[in-house]
Amino acid sequence: MRNSELDFFEVGGGAYDMGFAIGKRFARVIQAETEALAPQFWHMKDAALRQRDRIAQALPDCLDEIYGRADGAGVDRLLMLFVLAPELYGGTDDCTTVMCRTPRASLFAHNEDSATANLQNVALVRYVYPDFSMIAYTGATRLAGSAFCLNGKGMAFSSNHIFAAGRDMNALSRFVLLRSVINCGSVEEAQDLVSSADVASPFSLNMLELRTGRLCNLEKDLHAVSRTDVAGKYARSNHFLSRPCRRDKVPASSLFRSQKTAELLDALGDDPSLDDLIRTLAYEGNSYDESVFESRAKYPSGICTVATFAASTNGVALVRDHLSNSLFTISLDAKLVSRSPLC
Image 1: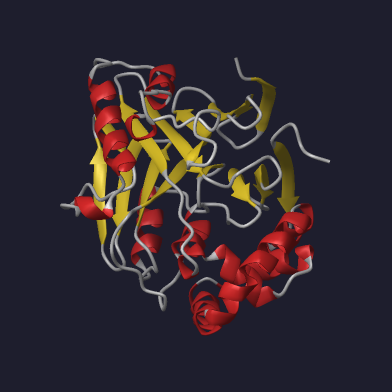
Image 2: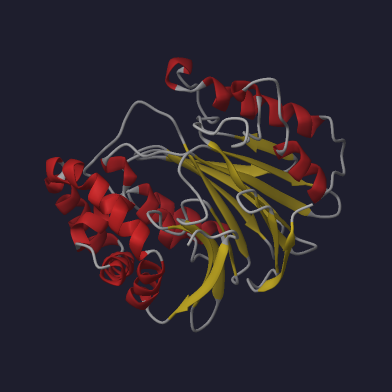
């Protein structure tokens, strides 16, 4: 039976228990995906073994969660790890983020783009810990942290893949590192964790610290971290902003989305609203490469916008799910307030 709405469910207990519950929920999808990727896995098994050892050393709780997901879905543990570390087989997604500090509030909004997300393989998941909870967009084959998250420690996060030439298959998957980052309670704690390990592929981390209103972006290449504290307006997509990027390595859509969102933000004046940022991310042009919001109805075979996340220091957080046309309202302590049709 096909879902008609984005699933929302809660998981709790230890890391293994959370992984097991998610694996059980997505079991059929995970079984199909691991079967499809098994031929690549056998060619990359040594790299997967090195990744396992790296995770065990750096982030053992994350390895427990990965093993739980494998056991819940009834698949091989190492194959599950391989699927959850897409650098090993080339999986990437796009996305666009805008942030703005106004006289009244700090605003944060993010488009999550994907070629493969659908109502059978993604969900909003509330992770319940003894001392806090968080709500994260979670895929059957993606760990929490790979998209966007709001945690009860007062942090909102989103991440962006960065197109670049280099990858390091011996380093920690960025998806694994980000799964731990979204448990952090401050910008500094997150930066320390991001700086603590080399990663297999570059990424960008966007943060809103709700208690202070601080907005921050971290760009992480394979080794170094560059930090940008946002005092006004900030827009980014999927290429480096802290240093020159090779345009031949960056898709035209990424260059356009970054430039267009910055232009639209500038036109909003000094005191935009959260709705203004959401409308900025909804911009559609005359073609795929000239759009910020890339509609699956128009471009069914491309990487398209599947959800928009928005948060503000003076209100609630919102998830606009474009797969089911639903609006989720979330309190800033990471509890689901309501769900309604998206107008």
